[in-house]
Amino acid sequence: MAIFKKGKNWYIDYYLNGKRKREMIGGSHKLAERVLDKRKVQIVEGKFFDIEKFQRIRLSEFSQIFLNSYSKPNKLSWKTDEYYIKTLLAYFSDVFIDEITSLSIEEFKKWRLEQNVKPSTVNRDLTCLRTMLYKAVEWGYLKENPIQRVKLYKENQRVRFLEKEEIERLLNACSPHTRNMVVFALNTGMRRGEIFNLKWSNVDLINKHIYLYKTKSKENRVVPMNRIVERLLVNIKERYISEYVFCNESGGQVRNIRTGFKNSLRRAGIKDFRFHDLRHTFASHLVMSGVDLNTVRELLGHKKIEMTLRYAHLSQGHKSRAVEALGQRIDTIWTPNTKKLKKDKLYISEVIDTKEEAEDFQEEDFDTHLTVAQVVTC
Image (cartoon, rainbow, N blue to C red; front, top):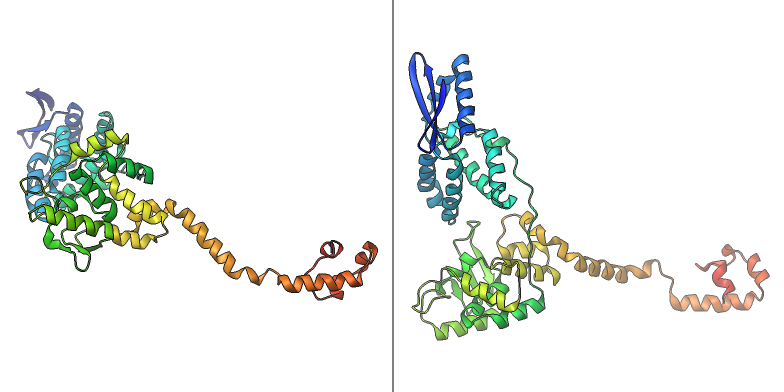
């Protein structure tokens, strides 16, 4: 049994029942060593043929089956899967999917962090790999998914939103075209893709509703318009002729405003902010205005309330106001009636003339909530 390199790939060489076998592992020497050790154990224990029952397939080949058979037909974000798969193949190369182990996935996590990417980015790669391997199990290419024993990195949920003063600076720094989309995003909370794909057939200016049918959550959503959005859409419809609400000069669909938005942020002096954060700004200001989290969830189109809970800390002021209102409402339960209190004080002051008499005065002698100390000060 041996390991050798040919070109950019490592191979393992071993014998099974007197027949020589070679397997291309990929660009990792460590992975080749692990697979060879695994083959040795399987041959000794007579378990190698358990693997042969499955149709062996390399990750590079299976990824194309995954994209064409599952991702593209079922996901609007299939291009994102395509991006993650390129990263996965850069590490695992042409490894057979049954050779991917929990240990090799842990080493992939370490390798990704060494490329100075955030833990959240690594988690997105792992999520894509997990879905692919679950489909491999479902379709008969794998016996079990090794990633189910791998933990994702803990993420800090990012909630970057603009204060009122920052919003004003940004709008003043935007070109007219970019400004329209920023104003729309700030007042609807719609996702960037939803804004780019929005057509006039989805807009009801009479009832002031926007109807979204192809959403990330795969559920229809109705977005109400406020007066700002209504005036904005009326103005756009009068000036541009296109099936898309936000179109380019030729009337075609807008696909990217990265450069224009980036320049607007630079002119406004705003850092660490993305277009998607306009959605966070929409939600954050709703919560700070006292809107309940479930309503915010419905407006954002979140399937589960857990996604909306990231904004919960912004509602502390609203909670304080609510508790204070409750206190004012039921304060009379334990606070003595002011008019009765004054009348009682006058009566007691006529009966008790000296401090000594006050000390002899017992609370049960007079049916009142006043203490001896209050009586003396009369």
